[in-house]
Image (cartoon, rainbow, N blue to C red; front, side, top):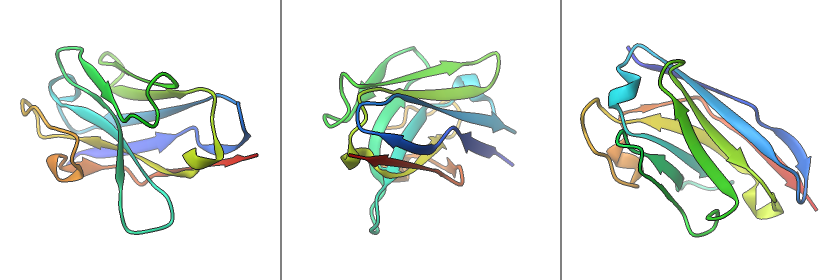
Length: 124
């Protein structure tokens, strides 16, 4: 069973920085596409960033240049470094893992395992 545990959320001010972490257990982390999604009040979980196993990354336009996704395969940990935070970044942030050896895309249905989420609140 794959378990993902996010941490690092909190309440910040506009312009602040924050780093989220996601520790993964029970899977071949280094062989899985990893992603970050977020959900503001509402039904939709929105793509934020993705890290493929070949080192390639991709970002949503809304966070490009401000957020950075990285992974430490030795620690089975995924990170999301967020800078220049805006109130529009307020959401619950989720990390997600694909099945090993599958090259997932940016759709939430491409991912098979999810964390419980961590709340990020940005005030102006």
